[in-house]
Image (cartoon, rainbow, N blue to C red):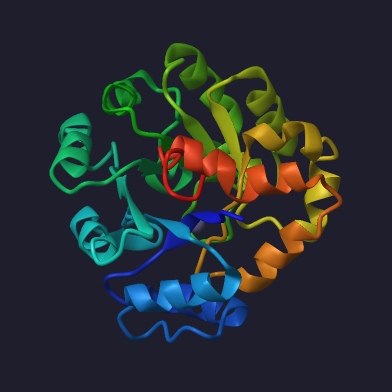
Length: 274
Ligand SMILES: [Zn+2]
């Protein structure tokens, strides 16, 4: 089975102390005080049977820090199994659309990660639209952090997935992915958007697999629109994958969630795995 992890983090500088403590409590197998290397990700991916991983840059200095686009691009260039996604902060970048174009055309990045509640903007603000126009033009997916987050200085109101409704209507050609599927407060809103909009997907990182069916009783029917992600290193990847495999779903639904939907979005459809 082709398995793709759509949500992985790396770090350039050591994370802030409290982030390290938080991660250590979840996944002690990584030494967060030393530089992370591609082999650390690949080791956990191999153990879990994951073929490809999407790795995010992060331009969120107010909350977690900065993981630069250049760093992530370089990091992923060592193996075709790691797929770099850019991060552009519309409040900090003087030319957000231009920066995204640079990341895709010059750095070879293949998607955009936005964290409205860490960057402080509503996804449907018109001033952010040039960024979506550029993503649509470049034919790359945009993944938004949605749902509550325990990190300090996060402003939760910006994480409501409902604001993506405007984006989905105004950019019908843009692939929109809701990381964490509205975790905490907004599961219903996330599910509703994924059902209504052909271009909107739910990504399930940070949600305990055992709770998934209670959050989303219609998961089988939704399986065309659901994507696996782990939030590595804040997870036990092998356990996550085996827990998803044992959900009471058809084999086809599990294959779609664990990899097929992501493969289509990432354009891996004609790869040797199909
Ligand atoms: Zn994450």
